[in-house]
Image (cartoon, rainbow, N blue to C red; front, side):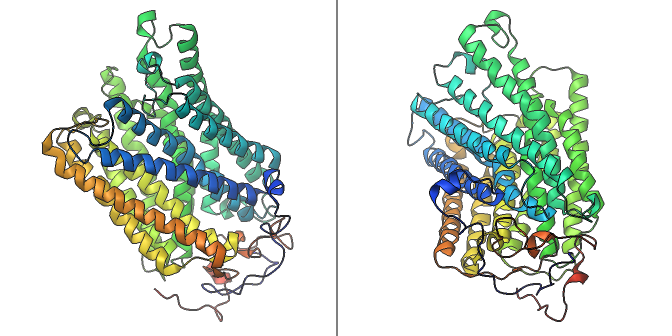
Length: 552
């Protein structure tokens, strides 16, 4: 891939060097607090978003434990509303949206481009502090009385409740600026800092995915900021935008919110697609099948995602013709998504597959995302959606796409780039066990919810009829299994930082520029300016004399 760096063993590499790197160059707390190094900022995002993920997961466990009994076990109805709202808000705004771009994107994007850093490093640091400020404000909202509107903050209830809606709205407004600045930074970096020879169609697909995501962040996020500001002004000054008592239209809020939030689904999932594209190639030792189709499908998804927001509102009373259009576009956006899934499967087919932990997480993603995608097609059908709207079927579909697919892709990418970023290896056996536990726990949690939803169990209810008790209990057991798998993963990753074996220079045998840096990378990433002379994912550049057969 580069003319400057010797090719190394495809699966075992050479031992990581002991040269100064971003982890041990000036390691005091203040040096981290004021750092402009994209890798350190990525580490800070990683720590912050993982804490948010664990908090959101704790809220989810509390919800599931409450639903062990039909009459509810732990909370009053009002407190239950707050707990599931906290779960959704923390997971969506503090983890799913920023996790991959903020942590893995920050860590890997400049390395893949052959750059020393992102184009705007001070803006990058500001983005992290805006995320941290938003997280603090969201936590402060809990102290100030909490919020119970659901993560969607639907009017008119969000206008009437006496909870801290303005505070959480301010948190989301600040988080939106963090997302916009990150997207703007990545766009400029991709345009301006590519290494010599790294043309658009030599870029890794993770870069393409982050680029498409960045376009969505810059174009769609301002709509959310304006919407939460309007809610705040409505509550404070009673203007009459969404309040039906003052001549406002609460359905207008839904249009504004989903005009952002459906592209936001792809802000969340496109980076996950990019990770999977990288991993199926590296760990199958094959060039990606349909590289250009996958690249263009990311851009197609970004464009079409602006046109499908109305499928969240099939029961809102919009016109029949609008519903037909949104239903058609919902099916249409599945085409570029299906292109990716088929390309990944074709890449894996007859490849030299290494069944290591990153690849196991990747396979788990392919299965879970297929279920999430197919159930999304079901919900895109008008007559079916009328029955399934606001039931647990929607909850299960949403989690298969959002939590299952995105979190699994994030975990896959984290395991894939962990040895490169930190220079140490985690316990591979524990990693495989954790992957299996997470996969089983996730499916045990949410498959019963498809059945409940199809039989009419509404979502967000604190109590339910005894007919659904067995399904809820199975789902609760699954959530506990899932939580134990995540806890095991956190344990061995942290343990690897304390006592892990040294990672190899190129642990998995990648051929993109990120694998041709020292391990961990130095402050400016490369010892010598890299240049690109071969096509992307060209494994013929590996020295076959030192390539060892991958061991499953």
